[in-house]
Length: 150
Image (cartoon, rainbow, N blue to C red):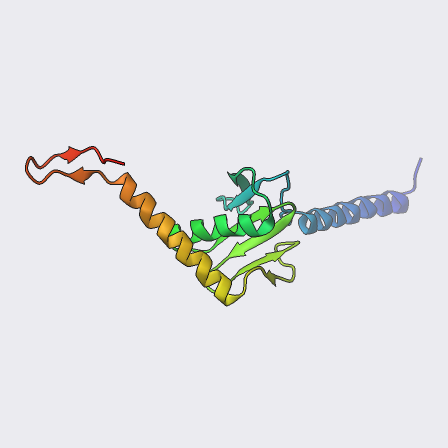
């Protein structure tokens, strides 16, 4: 049989090991960016603070195209949007659109200011066109909606 000192030491070792495992698990719980050929992902924050990802678009050719999709979502919602493409995070904020390998990693700007303005102008035009097509025209003579001719 083992001595009382040996049992205490074994118990202490078990508790220390459990604490270390908890610390490692906490460090590794940082979200990783999903990947998948041609998939643009959008990060959804959940109540338990664990992010989950939903596919925003398919057949997306590159990170820049995914960044444009996320910028459109940011503009429509009026708040910052985070997503991912091919294992890289994309952050669309009011100030800029950046990418990083990890959530807290060094962020690299995807578009310069002039390119971003051009992208935003194009997105605004698309959003306005989409909203116009979604609204039925009102027939002023009868007060009812009439189908839109295309």
